[in-house]
Structure formats: C-alpha cells, structure tokens
Image 1 (spheres, rainbow, N blue to C red):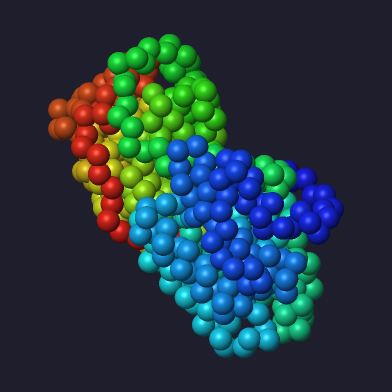
Image 2 (spheres, one colour):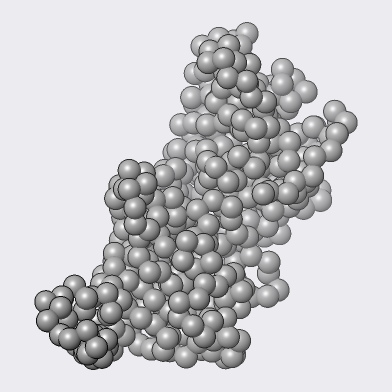
Length: 470
C-alpha cells in the first residue's frame, strides 16, 4: 500500500511558476517562454546545478498542449541537451488540445522527439502533479524518472472513454493513480506523500545525478563490523536487504529508492558512498527469496542502463538463489525480459563492482554483474556460495545412479561427501576465486573500503546510448 496525503488546493496552487520555484534556489528561476502558451519554460539553479524546467498550466484548457506550447517545450529540451543541463518537467495536462486538432498532435510528437534526442545525454525527470492523459502520459514515460504526487493520475485513455468504448466503469484514481503505477505497472519510480514531497524528491534526485564525477576518497572510510550482523545465522533464513544497503551508503545524504513497491525481490537505489553518487542494485531475500523474475530483471535492466547513460557508478549486492521457476514466469517472458538484464550489464561501461554476500547460483550468478559480463571487480564475503546450483542439488543429479545404488542408510553420508568434493573441485567459492570469477574474498566490515577503492581505480566513463523505457 502506498501512503499519500490528498488535500483540496486553491487554484493559485496550480500556478506553474509557484511549482517550479520549489525546485530551484530562491531568486534563480527565469522564465524563457512568452505568456499565454498554456505551458511555461524556465531556467534556474539548484545548488551548483543549472536546470531547464517546464510546467503545463492546468488553469488554461486543463493544461492541454497547444502547438505553440509544444514547440516551446521541445526547444527548451533541445537547448538543455546542447548545454548539458538536466530537465525537470511538471505534468498536469489533458494531452493534446482538442480545438487544434492534428496540429496539436504534431506538436506533442515534437516534444516526444526532443525527449528521445536528449535521452542518455542529460537526466530527465518528470513530476506528475495532476491528471496527465494521452500524450501527456507518454511524455513522462519517455523520461528517465517518473515521480507522482498524490493528485497525479496517469493514463492513455480516461475513465469516460473507457466507459463508452468497453462499458467498463472505473474512476481516475483506480485507473491511473499513484498506487496503481507504484505497484501494478511500475511506471512510477517514486510516489510523493504530498505535492511538496514529490517536488522536494525531484530536487534531491537531480542533485544526486548532477554530482557523479567526484573522485571517491576511499581512504577515509572505516571498517564497519555491523555489516556482517545483517545476515542471519541460518543460510536459509530470509532477511531484508535494506539495512545492508543503508550501512553501505553515507548516512548524511538520504538515498532515494526507486520503484520500491514493484518487483520487490530486487532493490534499486541512488545514494552516496564517500560523497560520491552511486546506483545500488541488490537482491532482497525477504521477497521471493531474492530470486530474479521477469519483472525484477526488467526493473534492474532499466536502472543499470539509466546509470550507465548518466555516468553513475554501480554497486551490486548479490544474494540470489536463481531465477524464479514456474510456468507463470516462463509465460510472462522471463527469457526475453531476463535477457534485458544480461544485455544491460554486458553493455555497461561505468565502473561497477559486485559483492556476493551469501549465494549466487545459476544464470542469476551471471546476470548480477558477473566478471564474465565485464564487472570492474567482484568480491565475495566468506559466507558466499557460488555455482551452477547448490552442491547438494548438483550431486543429486550428477551422481544420481551412484546414490541410488547405495544403501539407504549410507546415502546421506555419501551425498554429503560428494557435495563437499563437488564444491572444492567444480563449484563453490574456492573454485570461483581460482578461476577468476571472484577477485578475492573480503571481510564484510571492509566492504565499503573495498568497493570504493575498486571504483576509484577504474577509469571514469559513461555509456553512449539512449535510455529506452524497457
């Protein structure tokens, strides 16, 4: 359940200037478009970061795009891309203005083209603060991040059209409200408790994304004995990975978790370590045992490509037993959607370090930023288990006939002996280190230092690709 606070607001609160001023430092907002377009474009600053902003004006034709308003937004995005400035768009719009017909559709198409042309070159953040329908729904979906306020409603066709065409009765909140896009569709990266919370989150996110070129000073990091305490004593017991991520990241800069209520077996987060912005990808054993599935693979793939395009280094925390089995997953496209994660990591050129904390089996071992896919470094805690599958399961297959021919009372002892031999010779942590799939075994307490030293030693780079919405 996504908790949001919905309140009635005076019309003046929908003023695009008032909304944009929350995103920038006082006195820095400078409108760049003429009045009367139904949309306002502007420039401003947040700390050291120069921004391009635009906001639809719901007080004029419900914020619908006119041809002139669309042109102003497209040109503002083009200028931002040329100057290397992030873009923040505030959406509260009914889409194309009906009285302008196809000219309005053509205008929105130009906005789409500008967003795509800037994709991967600059951060683009959308804040959906009211109803955003039709073209005004696809605009945010084309950008890197979508933040929805409590009054946000996002859908291609509204309740009235659905009722006329299909006979289905649904209200706007149920159809495209914050909770639906946070939990069902995965369209929303963040849901704001209030409109101001959504705007402040957008401001924090653009600041994090604009501070990616600082060189990490890993030498000032101290060992943290609390790291090892996150894992339960039993290797089969589930646990929440969030406390581990919190210990990895700097305490003085609150991180931002993206899509926390969708595909919950995997966590994606933006934060800082040693003052440097990083993206974190982490399996969460509390949800589906941490298994990768079709949705979590797609979630991780888009996040990895976003970080790669924007030059954000990646830290990958691995505790994954494999891919979630079952016909539902196969029919849901786990092969096709799982391949997106393989492609994303194999394509990525940003520094990216993996830490295997407990287990990494099967294809998921490869998919979670393995050395084979080009990881900068792969470390493992002493508790790590690696292989095609768990040694006991592997032995049950490889030595099936031998075990079947063994008297029942001796079978468990033989199986344990064979599993130990398998782990030492074929699979397991020692074999992975010997093969080079793991650089070395590290103490949990030294994780922050080891990760940041590896990131600091890697050349700074970023992907040269757009950020298609996977």
